[in-house]
Image 1: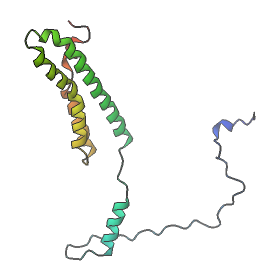
Image 2: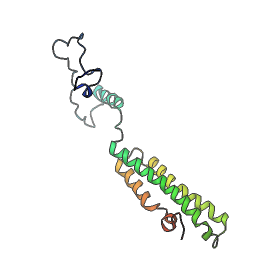
Image 3: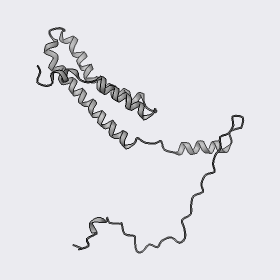
Image 4: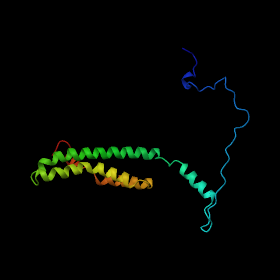
Length: 160
């Protein structure tokens, strides 16, 4: 065991390797690309346009930001809880609904209500692909507002 007080602040490999020598002179810089000017519609597409298209194809698309990723996780969890809320609330409401409608009429619609949050999340995700992030967020928030499991909110798990 060593008695170095700064040992906890370092990782193995932090210290430079003593056998390696620093490179002599400054590191060579990559040449910066020449600025491209927008070609007029009359001008033919030349090699610069082809090079720009190849360069754009090589670039990776921008990923989802951290805030958006956390938001999607929270909203996805809310949709999952809504599906559970519709199942619990619908099953608790079934005896009361049997006074008005038969089970063969009630159960398919109850299970469609259980699947509604999952279907809304999937539809919002697929239909807003390639669009701005705020459009997807608005679609998901609209689903959270519209798909509140009212049987669970009104009766809960105890029933009234």
